[in-house]
Length: 337
Image (cartoon, rainbow, N blue to C red):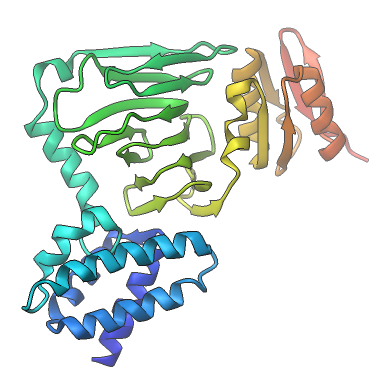
């Protein structure tokens, strides 16, 4: 029993830390269903919350929030003088960030809703495209305001009449979602579904980029990826490497991440290939990497409404990457010393 409890604790800690795989969820489901004594499970949960504050990515504010959510669950279960069953956890887990089935929940709920509850008007889609060098602002039928960055395509229904609010996008957008607890808001990208109720967050998911990122300014966000699910709170970010599938969760200043809303740029260990794409989209200028040069550089820096030349000069100063003009395109290259 002690080994079983340790396994459950490890899985719960992964959940507190905001990342768990579907295998973790299935294992946790089976283990939780085998625990029949409420006091035993409460003891394990209390111990997990105490240890959670030592996790690298659990700051004191988030720790208190998660502990409060867990306590809400315990308070509800104490009102029932019977053994805890798996169904009890499933009933409350969807809203409080603890245990069983959440990983399946977003995807299954989305698929069920999309297939069973979509009305005719949900199939009438509006598509918005943003040219390079431009931004657009769109107000969705529910009042949600979306800022679209250059090179972005977004599709959404003319009315949100089903029990979810689903939009699809490729590119980068900042969402200020109108709260509606009865209708979750879901942003679908190639890499993940981003699910919220009412919050503001940034999604960057260009097909050509090496990295995909979701960054939260306010509220809570759940990012549902093919093999894992992650929860994010304000000033947290998840980055997915599209090439190898690696996932990184970290703290990030989302005010800087959204510098593009005011015409700025923000690079924080950004691969040079992604920087090139950002510059192409922002300045509507063809930029390529010299095939005779080796580029393994990561770029850092903030640029506030600067010209393309000023940004390229800053990159050259910090990395040694030079640039030249060839016809209507700019070539980045390195020199041998």
